[in-house]
Length: 430
View 1: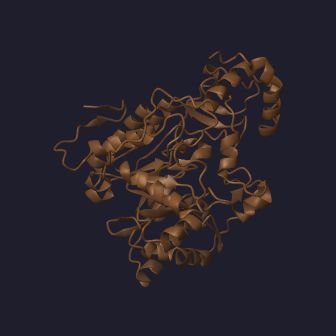
View 2: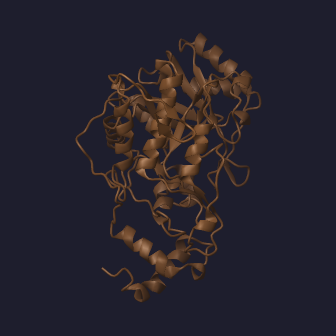
View 3: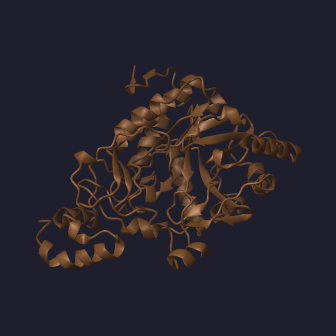
């Protein structure tokens, strides 16, 4: 088929389409021929050479020497606040489905595969997600928890887990303790729900999540419930907060808790505030190599940044140090173009194989440097569709990223007699 045969006929329709979904970008600044080609390939369901269909293989996480935890965004269902701000029925899918490619080879829009444009109000969706995760060796999900001085948002998916014992994949919580803004960046502009911290809130928060911490499915490290804090330094006195949480947990039959901070927004000194560890959260806290000058842009007014994915991999691995209690983190091709049309940030160059190599190197690290009960690797993410990093099947790659994940888990099965060493500076095994 000639991709450009109907180009002139569709030109004005495409111009109108771009004008509506990507304002304030001017369609006159687009290379429409290249853009049309990319869009048509997506519309026709063109798959990648790395496409992998669903298989019958089942890789059990409990037979592996490591534990993979995927971060999970519970946003994919209508919310009252989103209805008021963005219009009735808005979900993350609204932005995901309208994204357009900004440069040659830019994978947009990202369209879901088997699970479709799902609604997390349906228990069946969560059940199928857990089945897919378990089949491919994922040990559990880490759900972002949104709590603003007593106000809960997006709590339904976790509440459904607590209410349904058959949703039995292990889970933990990461408190996204930043303000909720129009720009999805936790900044100080256009704040929709402010995040205020106080000693009283410390106790109210730990009380609110107490049922989850006591749940038998909750993820523990050395018997301690794992609690992750996204932005520790937004709390006025994080050391005092951690102390209050620990005291409350001990006094209320939760026991000791394992508190981990996220390596984001420059934070890394977890020991100074009495935390137990740090989890990498790429692309945060990673030095980036801008490659805008190497890209052919369709949008000649593009105001975002494109970075080299493979460079980010090397930088993330180089940050790991056996002297620190850092849990490695990996990501797929992070890209928030869906949230910031024409201004997005993309880490370009990821493939299922390169992702597999990164996950494999991170897994080698925890096996070599951590005790058996502490061999956790975190994946960003299970379903961050608007940020381009997700394990869930899509139309282009199918189950390729899940399959790559399963390959790593299977490789590190406990029945393996020897684990090869890895040079983290070159990402080569020996």
